[in-house]
Amino acid sequence: MKLRTKIQVYLSVFILIIMLLVNTSVYFLFYKNATESELEQLVAQTELLVERLAKTTDTNEISELMNAFLPANGMVQVFANDGQTLEFKHREDAYKTLTGKFQAEETHEILKPERGVNVAVVTRPIIWQDGSVVTLQLSNNLVELSNTLTILFYVLLFASLILLIPTFIGGNILIRFLLNPIHQLTQAMKENIKGRKWRKIDLTNRSKDELYEMEATFNDMIDQLKDNYEKQEDFVSNASHELKTPIQIVKSYAQLIERRGKDNEALIQESVEAIDSEADRMKKLVEQLLALAKSKREAEHTKVELVQLVDHSVSTFKHAYNREIECIKNMESIDVKGNADQLEQIIYILIDNALKYSEKRIIVSLFTHNGDVIFSVKDFGKGISKDEQERIFERFYRVDKARSRETGGTGLGLAIAKSITEEHQGELTIDSVMGEGSTFTLVLPILREE
Ligand code: ADP
Image 1 (spheres, rainbow, N blue to C red):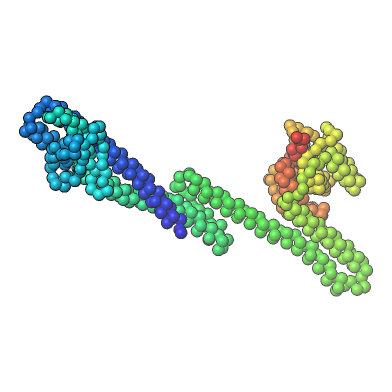
Image 2 (tube, rainbow, N blue to C red):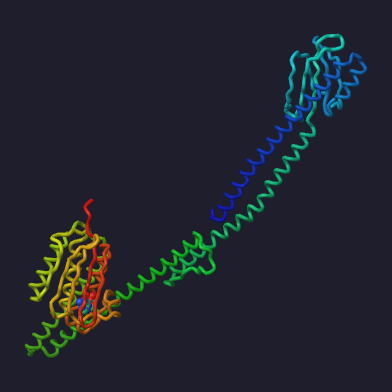
């Protein structure tokens, strides 16, 4: 069943049930009150008749009184205690149906016959002219009340049915209001699935309700998907471009050997060295591409002691490069939560860059501040301009392509470092002044023992 039909049916049935409950209550309340009031009236009328009868002994006058107090749609009867009917007055033959008998106690009740209208009956023992105790019975068929109730029944039924019309119209407006945005959303999704159109929903002149929020979220999602898709495309095209150059170089040297290498030892030697170096370069590039992909995957995070990790990296670089690396720290040990291999990779990338892009000494420092551990690498190289600072964390971005190639750079190091930092809820920033040098700072939250 369509959502539109469902809402319409549920709404109509719900309103109909409510109307039925309300109208039935109104009907029965009216019925009870009106019936009780009819009975009270008949009781009062009987009391008055009894009073008047007590004051007379004249048979004619008694008969006149009986006629005068005869209810509009009923009878007056008097029964002796031997079963004889002493008086019997009625208006129409139709009301003659009610029988009675002598009874000593006073009663008043509503008789509900299976067919026909209800009858109010009042019986009262009185002293008759001859001094004996007899039963006076007044009864009244509640014809007017029955007619009024029939009219009330039809009025309420009609009102219920009439009310279904605005319910139906209101339901339709509500459905349109609810379903339009959903239709638009479905349409936009279908178009986006068919072709990569990045179709968004027009939200101009829309009130800011929950549906607006849903559509705005959809638009944000499309923006994000588009952004990610474009980044992905850029990444693939950059990666293939980066791989193309060394492959091309390898191919050229291979062709060179083939053409002129047979008797030229020196050329073969030069070509092999070049091919080896380009193979190294490709290997590094592929390794870094894998590291970048891995940084996004969930790595296992455990307690990592940072001082030891930094000390170990600094000493490795000192031995490998024979360069002056100063290490300053204000603690013996500090724990963070993370992946030791990935954190070591950031330290390597930052120290490696400082060594690559500067000639003087470098300073590595490790401090704690306000619940964070701050690791920084400072060099005294030529620095990075403000504009470049914003871009160096992008994948494959290199300030000086030629120099970077010379130093074996791929433009992926800082992108990997940034990505790992984000996975560790940390922050990686750069502070650099042209001509003076650069400082890369990594901030990580200190692990708190619960
Ligand atoms: P690469 O492999 O080229 O070094 P990175 O992502 O590590 O790639 O760095 C991106 C670019 O940022 C580098 O090509 C270089 O131009 C610049 N850069 C990085 N670190 C420094 C630094 N310490 N001093 C000057 N420039 C740097």
